[in-house]
Amino acid sequence: MILYWHIFLAFFIPGILGYGGGPASIPLVENEVVDRYGWMSIQEFSEVLALGNALPGPISTKMAGYIGYEVGGIPGAIIGVFATVAPSLMLMIALLGILYKYKDSPKVQRLTMYVRPVIAILLGLMAWDFFVESYDGIGIWQTALLIGGGYVLLEQVKIHPAFVIAGALVYGGFFL
Image (cartoon, rainbow, N blue to C red; front, side, top):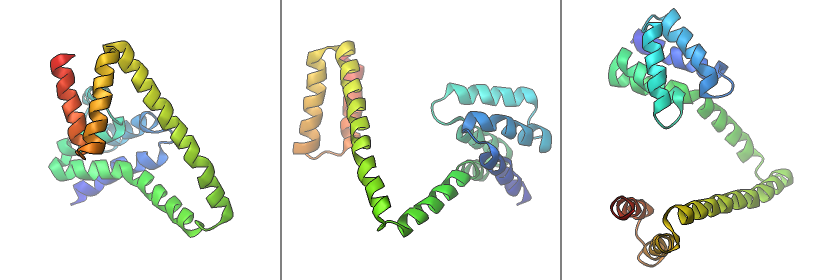
């Protein structure tokens, strides 16, 4: 049981102190894993770091999952990943509590009113960039087919978006 507590601390402390995200917490994790607990050598840690950098997603959670699994099995992996995201999760819950407390405040309502259009514009720009990239990569006819087919399947046939995305991936795998 003490091992799982050590796994938790090894990733929770860097999560709190590592201001700047995963890359900022890597030296802190290395200190805990290599120097403090001796679970890995520097060479092994560098290999885990290289593997974590090669895979998509946040580096700190991948490293926590792998190191936690190596040290404590599946429960260790779960505890390591939870300990990595716990500081952000606690901060989000606290800030959400404050926001919920003042949700009827005119200032908070005004802030929400200003944020929504900005998010809509950013999503629109992202969609436009995807369209341009698709047009440049596969041409107008394939792009139109995928957009039109996606629209029909989502809005008319009411198929779940995950199936539409999977279908587009299969189409791209075979025809593009």
